[in-house]
Image (cartoon, rainbow, N blue to C red; front, top):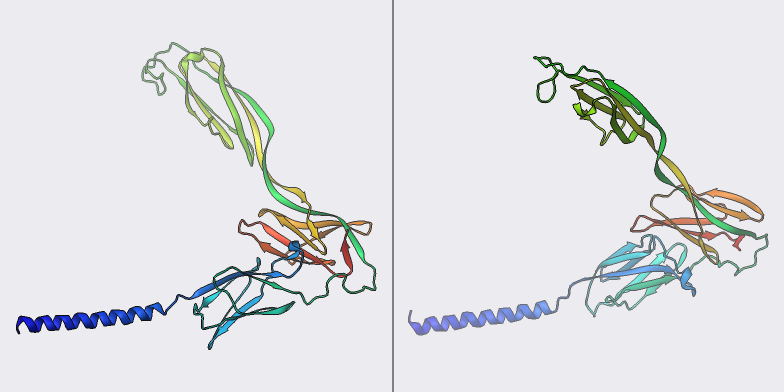
Length: 329
């Protein structure tokens, strides 16, 4: 094969490769990545303070033979997708909930945050005459408890003990001697118990009489005594007296009652509790009677319908809506 033929074949291969790459480029340019629609579902109301999130609303969309659906969480938030990112496919978004009017939205802009407001199907408070008496709810307070740990001083100890010995007696192979091995010595140890669940704190130990300079602390947990205190003393002279002093404390866990006040907007009430709150209840005056209403796990109240939402920081948001025969004052 001569050089002219080889050059012709190479040119042909390059031409075919260029044609293939061009076709691939044109195909890829028609493909757009699918998108996810992000939004929130709220109650429709002219007052922004009453546009609260709607839990468990169904958000769905159909395109071609495919249907995608999701539900809103406690914050009303939802993500729907993947959805096609092609202008020729017009999307219709349907948002529904048993207690609200269904919203059908089209066209849908996939490149923005989506806010859906649903109108309630329930009668608006005060929109229809009510034949029975209306009971006023006043002086609302929220009560709850939190665990608190406190350390209290419940007593103290003052103890003295002797380390007996006779000075200037040569060691002469005795089992206990002075640190330099020259004089006979004695060792005395004491242990004190703070009692079940108690702790020693601020421990002080001092030699108060006798030739204290000829003594040495062999063992001690004075720095971190805990529930017991142990001291061992070596003495290689005459008898000495040590004094031990300490406070005795106890750490206890107790329930602290806290109180806060809810925010009311028309017929709704909202309040937030910390993550550590336990046993929430609502204290209020119904008519002229002060009553405490425990919420309990099911959040049942005779005069309102309540639900709670868990925030990212683990705090809990409570929303309560009055029943028709009650009113906040």
